[in-house]
Length: 135
Image (cartoon, rainbow, N blue to C red; front, side, top):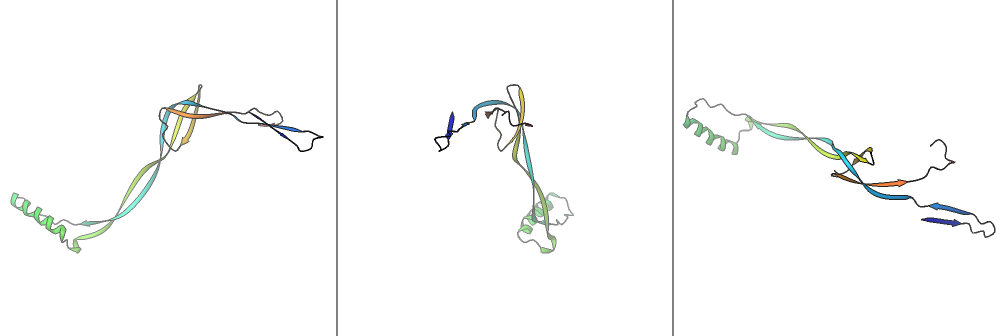
């Protein structure tokens, strides 16, 4: 598509031709997708309580100990418990490095989502203008 822009002066008619960009769409073959992770660290405070040792290892003492543990959790002595900060790391994908090929050439792009096996690409062709040197 060509657009012709003319000046308002009818005597000296100058026309400027602006050509629309030559664009088409195609599909490239995805070779590899590598997730890019962000590592987050979260800290939360947990209660840690010391367990009192059981001296007798008989079956009856284990049952009594289990019952005591259940009851003790409900009414734990404050001297046996302390608040402890626990740090956890979480990794989450924030982007994907995608290696793909189109017409024998290999490319890499960072994308916000995993494209799967095929990647829709935009192909734009623009001629090099002779007056634009050094490009």
